[in-house]
Amino acid sequence: MKFLRALLLVVTWAAQAESRAGYLFVTSPANKTIFYSKLLTAGQESRNDPMMIKKLYEGKELERPLGLAVDSSRGILYVADAAKREVLGFRVYEDSVYAGSLSFDGPTTVMSDISAHWLSVNSVGSLFVSDPKQGRILSISAESLKARLDGEFKEDAKDIYSQENDAPVRFPQGVAANGRELFWANGQHGQEVGAVVRGLEDIGKSLAQETTEALSKDSESAFGMCLTSSRLYYTSREHSLYSLRADGVGRRVTVSNRLQEPRGCAYDGDGTVFVADRKAGRVFSFAGAEPNLAGSRIMSPALEVGDAYGVAVLITSSAPGSKALTLLLAACLSMVAFAQ
Image (cartoon, rainbow, N blue to C red; front, side):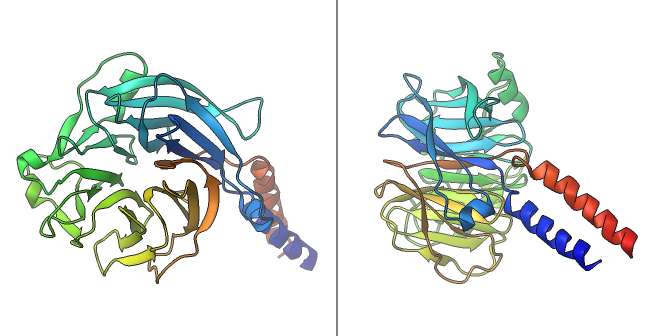
């Protein structure tokens, strides 16, 4: 019996150590390139294994790639190209020959004639896009995106919030959606409008200004943005990364004020937040899943990427070997139960 319990502990630890499976994407506007790296498992992190960077795409279809968003359920990467005034879509999938590598289909233009800077995908696959030059935030449904990726055209994107309609939108930057609520960062604003604003993804017939709330009225401009299950993270023009509770309760917390030119951030769904520092040419990682964040975080260098700007995480199926570990874990549980 003691042996079975010990075996159960070992197998449980091994399963947890190898559970995280996914990829981190990074844009580099100066290099006109999208890079990626396989996420490290807990076991690899404990051994201080480095993340290995690879090139996903560079070419004439990219001029100034900025924000990224990933639809993990459908395996789609979206890229905002501000210079080409387009949003591009890539269908990405794990390479069947080379472990830890990705292949893709695309790029396909899913939106055009828009000065897109930042993107977010919600839980049902709808895409949200910020257009700072026109002072608006748009959305397009998962169904329409699929049609466009398949070479068909189906309904145009729609404005949700815009400065023209008196919404609190001022040169909007980062956006983040969770399936019900939409958050955005204002790059230019008065304190009465707010640096960070929360609204509904679908405002229906309600007036935009009646469905929004300023979560932060600090004078600093906000840029990149990402959500965990309970917290919102956003970057400033220089040096700082801040955090707020997503429900708006409490004051903002300074996560770090030692970055140089922070831009995009992304949550991996497993406790780690990544933030791109454009001027430093690096992507940093830190523990960011706690519901009540207390003070600054230790920033660990994750990748070196010149002019790192947008980041996003693709969550894939279980890591290699984890299915076998899961089966072994189930067998151990059965034996323990039988022995009792």
